[in-house]
Figure 1: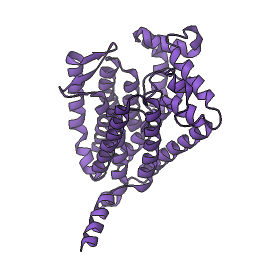
Figure 2: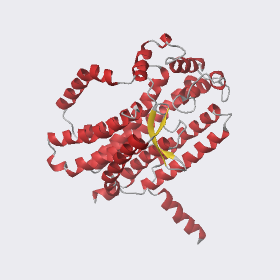
Figure 3: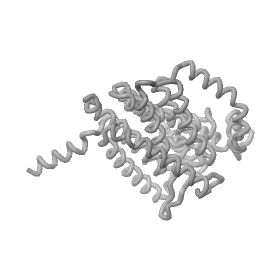
Figure 4: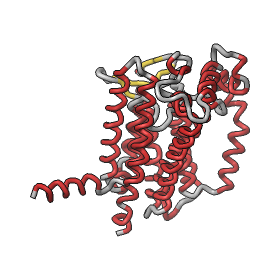
Length: 368
């Protein structure tokens, strides 16, 4: 009896869990936890905090995976409205840290509402397109763009260009998968290119400096160019096979800035080398490939565009962070998924994987 009971419990626990997604995510998390330990060897409390963040993230992933896409769709509008309200509250009452007003204090902790929009925006836009699926017109795409522009502008105002880019990318992917005409896309890109000089004048001084530093980091080696110079030195010093775990000199002599968060890839590269980077990149490619397979097999427009958006958002995370750390993109403050230290972003990414699991495991139920 006990064996049968335990078997039923186990089947219930893994019923809606996609094993390939879970194994790939767990492997990246394990690599991330080992790298966080190396990057923060003198602060063990961060290792314990990250382990707790991962457990919370896995719990959130499992919980979301149990929800069918129909229920996920119902969360789109309320989550979007709550997120917009919280962003407005941040504008007036947010905590200011290092010149940026991005957090709300809850007394016992602080939260970053912009992270909620990474999930809320694609759910909201997917719900909108699903609602008008039978009669999609040009005006629906215009309204969707406005729904995306509002949170993008509020987040960019904080300023938090990295998160704004991620939210904007997640929303754009939904609009793209919903059937945005190619002619409109070409017009949008042309308009963006034409607006570049105007956008340049709206950037903060430190943002313009980061872009200029990208061209030649040596113009300010101890200032805005320091991050890129030190990270590229660490990546190059890792060689083919790395210096070994806990043996990175650039890391432990504290030359690498933000080494446990945005620049954790530099730590990993120094210790694991080119071989480790190739394995890590392969894991991300497998994760993204699995997500695209789930999107292709989705049964409804809502499920298809959400799965596609979530998957390509993960790709955007990886591409921007790796490009930033290797010096081919400006420093914009984007974490490396499931590797970088942090709670809110990790839970948000875990929820994204849970959404993919939900769409995959409930696809037969959706057809009926």
